[in-house]
Length: 314
Image (cartoon, rainbow, N blue to C red):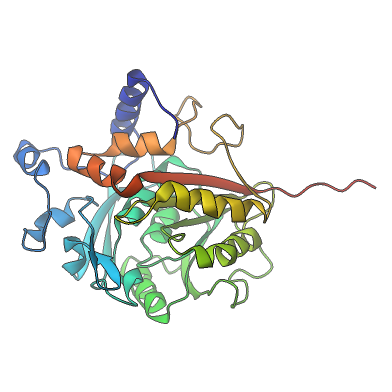
């Protein structure tokens, strides 16, 4: 992870306050509560509706959970792709986490992924989300101006939930939920490649790395399309080792990680200065508690990948 001097982090804080982003409640009455956010299922779930706030995830048999997953509906405010200061409230149906049902709730990793999306260029693009869960990131990509978004998952119950959330937020003209199991199902966007492939927390099982890398490589547009992937640490997971292991597999599929110094680096300030996504996410934390979540379990890693195809000369 790149280290940034203090003045750069201050610049990031200013950027967050001035650009499109998730809106945080800044009232004085919430400042005291912000330092003692939800840590147990017995706490008040009203804080879960504070515009996508991060909450502690705990291990349960066969899965992880957090207190916000106990809510049947979670609302998240997102700035849309306009120059005004208006925001759109997304209403997300979810179900409690558990064995075989981890994709049915809003996870911290999905919230972090969608904090990055307003800073990227999605207008008139085709987007595929892998492991869509509730469909939150797909909905935000559509809000950012994407032409077509495919929310994909291999769990039929997840697809049904994503379909309901697409309808719930009136995004059915742009977003489509599609069943897609890596390595088994046919391409969810036949006769087309994606400008963006996005996803989060998909690399926790090393056995799935080859199938995931194959899916990414088959979906993304060669040389110009971009894969955005985020992994958030959990207790018992080594994020650095997980990402490095996945990268070794991805690179064998011609997927190359973009570097901050590359001209293709997609995350930039309004004046064109490259932004490190991990530094941006740290600066986006509304308090020390969120930052603790961001840095726990080995931290957070964000990858931008491109599929590089060598040109053949006759």
